[in-house]
Length: 266
Image 1 (cartoon, helix red, strand yellow):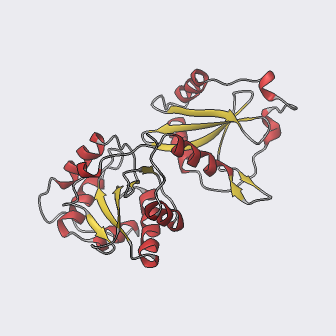
Image 2: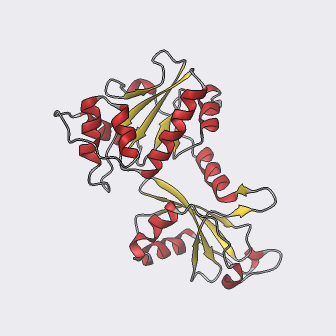
Image 3: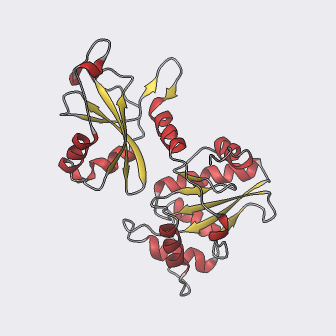
């Protein structure tokens, strides 16, 4: 069970009240008497049988008695909270009552901004991509997605909202197959053989899709391309300015990022 705990942390999406009193609190400056470093967190990962997980950031949580740890596990970024005793962890998200804001999500977005990465779009061929939107749309967004990735299905729903609202944005969908998804390879091949967005959407809706009707190297090529671009998880979007965006976003945010890119820092 422990080896799946990090995955559950990344999947956590329910709202709950955590029993903070159980972790040991402090008054005023907690860092005077409590500390947590990356080596200690890596030891926690090893105890949870997830030694491949990496620490991206450690800071005090707004909830007294907890450290907020941002982690990466096979390309998926998540948040967990470690008690000052270092004996307990809590999976997010944490919401602020007065503003109804998701403080965990804000932390994740900040991490993504701080580690911005850009790619040269000329290195991303689109010949085997599925087109969602108008071919002559002004802004083209490339999406690396896996047919058996639940987050990818959620993002796809947001992409459909985008094209319903803005004809200026189109998505070029590159199907890949993550090693953890045993059926993703043949499903991606079947969808690409048919060049069918409908099959992809049927699959995301848990409907059965046919086995591949052809032989294609497109999925293998996409997998190799994602490795060359250092894209290790799905979903991942590449914006019109080459900005790599890991994880899902809502339709409003995607439109803003596609149509109003931030200035790239040299």
